[in-house]
Image 1: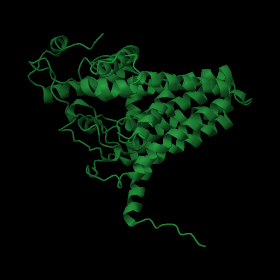
Image 2: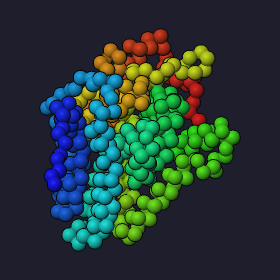
Image 3: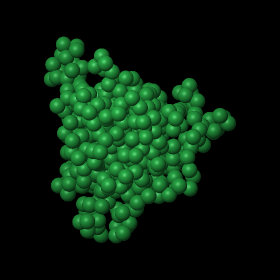
Image 4: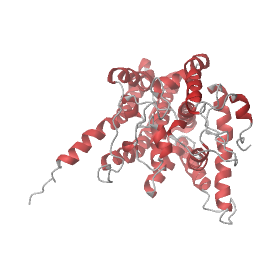
Amino acid sequence: MTSTIPDISPAQLAHIKRALPFALSFLLIPLVWMTAFIGGWTVVLLPLVTWYLFSIIDSLLGLNLDNADPNATDDDLFWYRMITLLWMPAQFLTLFGLIWYVPQADHLGGWEKFFVFFGVGVMTGTVGINYAHELMHQKNKIERFWADALLAMVLYSHFRSEHLLVHHRYVATPRDPVTARYNEGFHRFFPRVLRQSLRSSFRAEKALLARKDLPWTDRRNPFFRYWALQAAFLFLAVLLGGWVGLLLFLVQAGTAIWQLELVNYVEHYGLTRKHLDDGKYEHVHPRHSWNAAHRASNWLLINLQRHSDHHYKPDRRFPVLQNYGQEAAPQLPYGYPVMTVMAMMPRVWRRVMNPRVQKWREMYYPEITDWARYNKGTTPYPR
């Protein structure tokens, strides 16, 4: 009896070749295991690769201005979808495998253990939360649960509610906690977002239930699932690694949240939707998000830097997100890896970005001459 392996058609092979660069993030998994096995100076490799190597490749490969067919079928996008689906179990095995291994690794000192999990947090924040972001926008229940699992691994489950119910509705307005205000440094933005996004996401889910005449305590409130998943992962960390394992789990979670909010800070810094006379805001347009067409960092971040199209068409999967030129959307000078490092240096950030915000204001809203007074008159975010 013989078995045959079905042939891959030329069209399928072409899809696989186009999808493969977006799977480069999976190379971070053996890299983080290598740092744990070897220790020493290698524990800083993963942040260096994520932040700097992809930036160097960006400078070599330049921009990708091509657009895929936005009407691509599910069959066309199969291999892209598989990349996002496979990441969750791969991250789960890596994270909790290391929580078991590292606390008992005698060749690793305390600081080496810390930096191994700092690197894990860079990975779970840069890649894991980004994949969760892609999955939470889908209607498929497995994909949405995968998103919840990835977010629970970094103790930031409410991000799904905040992103879908608050951010996409109020982006580029004072009612969106994660839209960075003009001249607001990241060191002020970060604690504000941690406080406000948790409150705004819970209020949004509570209001959604109230419209169905249900209390916030109803079992359909996703916060109960969020809390259960997070508690399960905290318990598993203690079970596998003891109290040291729990501490290392918290290190990676904190690092991942920091990475996420750095990206949030960059994506909409200083951009504002016009406040209309009827008390509402204009519709979201491509001009209300910063874009970066840098090829390599878009591979790593599965086209997250094509952010204008994501807000314009939130249901599009990452491979068919469209690129916009500078006449339609504001452009970042570098990809997110460079921009997030720059965000940690307020003076450098303002010197680079404030002139771009001012140019954006003059280009799209020349009728607004006093922006300080204008922003004071807009509807504030809920407190």
